[in-house]
Image (cartoon, rainbow, N blue to C red):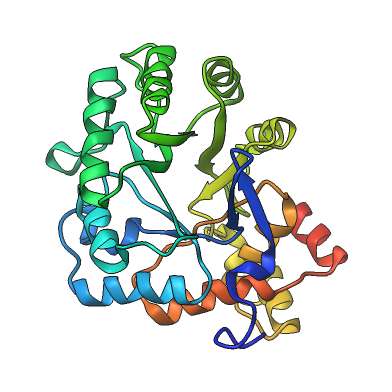
Length: 288
């Protein structure tokens, strides 16, 4: 593998233009794991969490994804503490639409809640405008269109630059696109869970970025001596790096956001941007 301190870093995987004009490197950072156990409260080592964020930017990562529900609020506050004033090319993306009563994940897609959530994120992140604000999950008790219209209004007011969706299907993406331009979709997707393949293909057709959450899950493929181990050994890489390289090679719309609370693990993830799998290896993994 190329040394992550001297190589091209996250930019080696190329860039993606979210919303047509927000150009970011195609390997981002997910800030969910910077909080406490259960994605609740402060991390055990707050300074290490801030160090991870600063190191990510040093390594060329310029897309950082978070949400108001991570902590709640803790992840956003850590990002601002570590990185504000933000480097000019760094994009902070956040989400609203989940609440965390008692540690549970409860959808809240009411327009008034999304407006309040967005205002809170603006304050915590110390921003005048959020570059990418994502609806975290559809709320079965609120018409999906009403939630999307709320984000369209925030965009019109200049409080957000681009609108994204998360945890949606193809039909919901189509509905949203009829209301407001959609820059990204963030769904669960990895080597062992490709249930959002149809959504990914729709994103490719519509020139919408696809942000796979839980990108490093590999299921049975991670067993010792398995396919991932074999391919990783050929490249002097780790199975996690191969899993990320597969995502990057699988679709030009892909923008993985592996998260970690460890600087060494961060450096390992970012180095995956320099790993190029052979066509035969990509095909083996596609069939797995």
